[in-house]
Amino acid sequence: MPRHMFKANWLYELPFGPGKPFAPTNPFWSRLVEGWQTAGIINWRSGRPFGIFSGRGTFHRDSQSDANTVTLTQPANVRDLAGRRSIGGGVFWFDPCLSPETGAACTDPNAIAGLFGLPAPGQLGTLRQTSFFGPRRFKVDFSLMKRTWLTETVSVEFRWEIFNLFNNTNFDNPEQEIFDDDFGQIVETIGTPREMQFALKINF
Image (cartoon, rainbow, N blue to C red):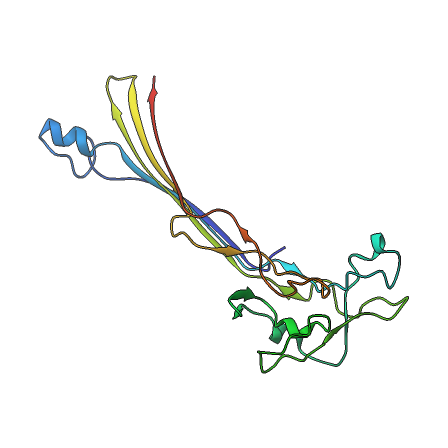
């Protein structure tokens, strides 16, 4: 689970129309401004925990060793090595040189080449399974609605709904196996770009 999570929602009816603080006397304007509401949902959370895995059956057969972590080749404060960065046009959470399998040159001055090593045969990796936290996520959904009463029991409702209002990109966790060609890179996003929809319905 993320370390921090914040969720909030609101529904607010605008103070215009009959019986409201701002009530036009003109029937046309009164009908135009009455029944407006705004609503929204805010969802913010810190990144999900994850680990770095060897992806090799050094402790047991492959089907039982997928979750075997790596072994550090030397002492290091590994959390200082995590964070979003651009390398070669891609989005990374780790410098690929931390894996001894990529053969990449380090671009992070604090990175240690080959730090994440393969555990010895019959050994478990020494790195904890949830040593890191991935990218945070933020999303706002918003809607604007107008309800117009045709009679005492019949109304027309118009809605404009926007999902991911600010078109925010939420990145997934990076590739976590040191033998993966994309190790350390973020190759997927969570959710969708901004989407809008309109709705019209009759309530009776």
